[in-house]
Length: 361
Image (cartoon, rainbow, N blue to C red):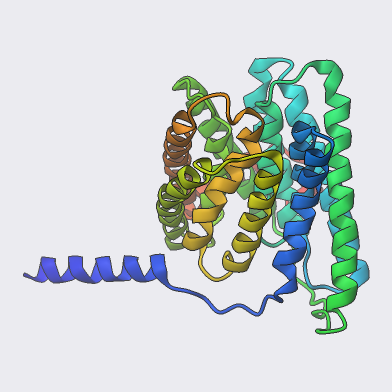
């Protein structure tokens, strides 16, 4: 009887974590600006009947989501640095496809480096997630080598447009609300910046290697799901995030199926993706599960829109759910390692032997 009562309390706690909404003071203009940053490249691509170009360029528009509420000069410099990083991540991912065995090491290195950068400079959510996602899409999007410079230029243009929109948005919203004061942060430690980043990057690489070992058709979603889960500030947070992502993805696939029933043209697809971005950025700070419902169709459209209409979408949806399960499983295991004091100490001790003395503290 006591065991049944404990099980009931555990289930009640899990449901609370899964469905609880959080308050948010995010300005309503922010989701609109985010939708414009990611949607305008799609509309331009639809206008010129080059949706493939629009889809590459909109990946650069994701950099808008790294805009913070610091003073204008500081936030714009940080955003432009993120824009450079997202272009570099895509470039490294795209170059790795020229030699297939290099894809897993390349994405592992990208995950390690961008996680180190985000932790050292205190970059908030979404952290290293979109850098790795863009690199993964670049690595698994077949493209002739002579078209790589064009693709890199398109993503750079998308990032530039996002910076312009971010500047206009910032000038407007700073009239409504003052920027947050810059507060000194604790000095970065070796374990937080180096050791944890190596573990996170290693888990990303392991998840991608498993996806290739199991010959999954679209392996690039596995490391993205892994990274989205592993970043929890505690093991409880990691568990909550993987549960929210699995439930949200499952429901989101139903939304995706409903979207595929619509008569999708380049114009309607662009507008649909803008609406999805608007909903996601409105809800992600309030309820991650609800946001994940709309993240699923958006990310499927980002990666697969160029090939939609050439066959049944069912294999895409099945592959996405399997990829999410595998990525979340690896992310949960990695999160358990990250929050294990003995494991972190052993990894940190091993890494300290490989770096100069001046970088150890």
